[in-house]
Each structure stands twice: as C-alpha cells, then as structure tokens.
Image (cartoon, rainbow, N blue to C red; front, side, top):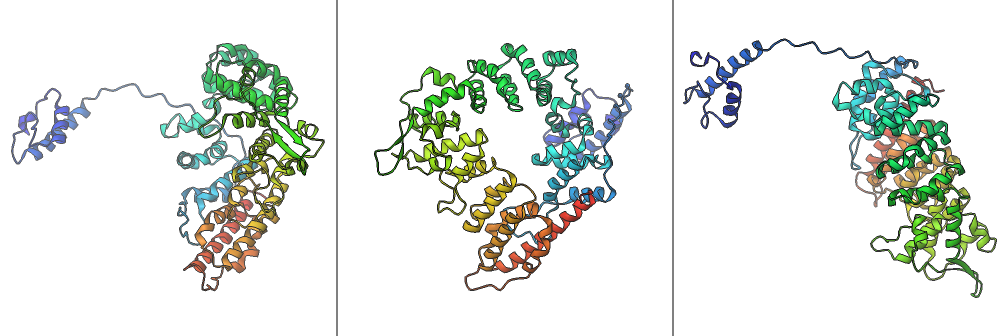
Length: 536
C-alpha cells in the first residue's frame, strides 16, 4: 500500500480498466504484478475511493421543490384506502387460459375500483401515489383512470421521478395550467408560443365548451402549421362537430396533405346536410338502382370506372389496397360517405329493413352492405344499424350486412346500452358464447340482468356438457369484471364439482368448480368494494 499512497494521475480510470480486464492482462500503476495483484488492486481502489470522497468540494444545495398542489377533493374513506392498498399489492392471475385457482385476480379489479372512485370524486391518499403511478407505468390501460384519481399531484411527482414521465405526456399540456377561454391574451400567447402538447390541450379545452371559438383560434394559424400538426388539430373538431364547421372543413379539402384531406372529408360526411355529403349522395346514387325486370326487385350496382379529381378532392383514396379491385374500392368509399337518408328515396321508398332484405346482383352484396355498415357507424344511425344487424336468431349469425364480429360490435355501439345488452343476450341464447366475446366488449358495465343471465346460462350449459373448459376462460374473466354482483347468490349452486361424463374433457369438472368459485368470490368482493366507496 505504501507504493501507491501518493496520488497518481487518472488513478481511478486505471483501476477500473484493470478490474474489467483482469490484473493478469493489465496491472495498474503502483501495483506489483503477480498472485497478490488482485488484493493490491482492491486495496488501491479502497484508498482511491477515500481520496475521491475527501477531495469533493462543497457545492450549492439543490433548490427545494415547490410544495405539492393541494387536492381539494374529499378524502377517500379509510376502508376504501385499505382496499386500494390491497389491490395495488395484488398479483395478476395466470395468463394464457391456464388454471388460476379460486382466488380473485386483484389487479383486474383495480380498473373498476378506480372508475368508481373517480365517479365519487375522491382524492387519492398521498402515501399510495407512488405505488399507483408504478402500477400505471406497467399497464397503459390503467393510466387514464389512475392519473384522473391521482390528480395534479401526479404531474408534480412525475417531474421528480423520470420513471413517471408518462404522466406528463398523458396530461394535457404536461400539467401546465391552461388559461380560461375568457383570458384572450393568455389564450393567444399560449396558442402562438406554447409547446405542441400545450396547444392541443388548449384547443381541446376550448372546443369542449365553445366550439366556434376553438375553430376560429385554429383558423388564425392554420396556413403556417406543419401537416402532422394540422392533422392533430383537425381531429379535435370531432368534439361538438356541427354545421358551422362546414366552411372550414371545405377549405381543408384542398389541403396539401392527403391525410388532412381524408380527415376533413370524413368529418364532412358525418354531417348529412353538408355539401360534400350531397356530392357523395349523387355519386353513390348513380351507382345503385333497383332492377324490376327480374322475378323480384333486385339491387344492381354499377361501380365508378374512374376516380376523377373531384372524387379525390372529396376524400376518395384513388389507390386501392393490395388485393382489392379499384372499382369496388372507389364504390365502397362513395357509399360510406353518402347520407343514409338518401337511400329510401333512391330505392323506391323502402325502409332500411326492406332495402337490406333486397337481393343484390353480381356478388356486390357484401361490398354494398359493408359500406352501409361503415356509414351507419359514422353517422350514428341506429335505424340502419338495426337493419344491418338483423335479428340475433338469424341463421347468419352476423345479420345481413355484418361481415365480421368487429363490424357487428361497431354497429351495436350505435344502439342504446339496454338495447345492446338485449341483442347480445339473444345472440348468446341462440348461438352460444363461441362468437360472443367481442360483442360482450361493447356492452355497458355492469351487464344488464338479461345479458348476465344469458352468459351464466351459456356457461352452465358448457359446464354440464363437459366442454373443454379453458376455451371459456376469456368469457369467465369478463364475467368477473362485468356481471352484476347481485348475481352471486344465483351462482352458488355451480361451485360444486360436477359429475364428468364419458365425453367430458379430463379435469374439466375441477376447473369449472374453481372458475365458478372465483366468479362468486369476485362478485362478492366487488360488492364490498362498492360499499366501501359509498355506493348504495
């Protein structure tokens, strides 16, 4: 040690290099090579560590952070606070459809707990904010509800810990206080000088309360904005979209950016009274007619032979995707952008149900009905959605116009919550659960009584039949989160292990018993959680 007691230039770097390479390959200055070199290296590192620490010069103390903002919301009830700590400490259940046992999956109950707490307007306990933000960091689906519950303190903490930066990105303006719409000078300054996220937050906030003021603000800088920014700003006009927005959107149809033009056209087509909707109605109407020369009235289609400049200006994309014919591609865009109200007059005064029931010549049926489905969703037309869905008991389970489960789910989203639940319940009663998972996802929570009964009855039928149980694990998971807790009592009889028939899957009875035990336990836990949060 005496040989290295004097300071050596760049000693620390030499010691680190020797430690990484090994003393057999490189011996640091002042250390004799040989078998004792590793020990001498460690001694030298200890001395150098003390020297480095002793040689530190005092610096100015870091500025203390500003106090966290006050949360004026009512405090969380003590029992609910303890429940939140338990949920945050819980571990997710097994994935992949494996056996999870009979214990509830606590982490899967956290989204519902947060939704209820937010609806009740409670403030988050300060001591639980770090673990709440950690949970939201790992699960993006939790972030909106978790950040709403955490309030302004989430952004305060995010500025102190880079692991929680997502809170700054997810909070409009990064937590920056937005000026009120009445503060015209503050609004102008932030709009002209603010960061992009702040400008988006400002525009969205004004649009929610004063749509015209937001549109006028956007118009002041529209010509100088970047294309990608124009697209984001234009998307904010979906909130409160109305006829007064038409002149601005018509101007956007001539934008340099194809994406901006397409978005403007989509917004205009959602306004049935717009000039673009009228132009699309003329184009689409020229492609569809009723032929009365056949045995029964039949819809005939003559798709456009070209995509002219006027069609492109109105948002029709000329280049078809791979595998799609150009004419059918253009035709579908015209029909989905035309007001649905024009078709009864164009097709002999028929109702939507009668129109959808007409045969369509030359294999154009799927293309025409799929375009009407997209139009019904875009225009939020429940009448056309019902016609295209058809009856749940129809032989073609998706109805006459729905060509996929995703399309049926979108059509259902245009209906009221009660009607949605009734339709899906009837669908399950007829066709079982094999195709119902995606449809269940658009139903309100908790499920209405008819839908809950239909799901439980279908699961019970599968249980009694000895069906392969793991194929229903997804529906079971949904039932744990969405079934009305009041149904728990009705399910108690299903918790016993059923007799397994000759055709039953091995071990199916035990799985079904565990799954129903977990379902009942989870429903009761959800009921307790609601009581703790003050829900009657």
